[in-house]
Image (cartoon, rainbow, N blue to C red; front, side, top):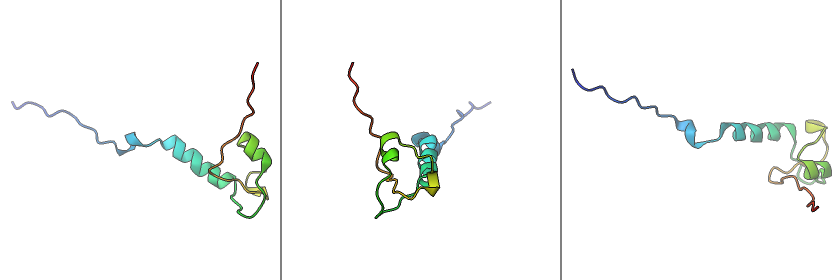
Length: 72
């Protein structure tokens, strides 16, 4: 009987982070980009906005929440 070939799995998803892609897509749908409008200050501070897609302000995708430095 010939030797059995090893079972190989070709998983093309191993190099990508599916959850991260999902979060980016969800953020794009929830927080609208409105170039020319003032930036949503709450979104800049927290990375969230309670108005989501109804907010009239700009939510830049490249901007991350800025947390104040706290020293004790």
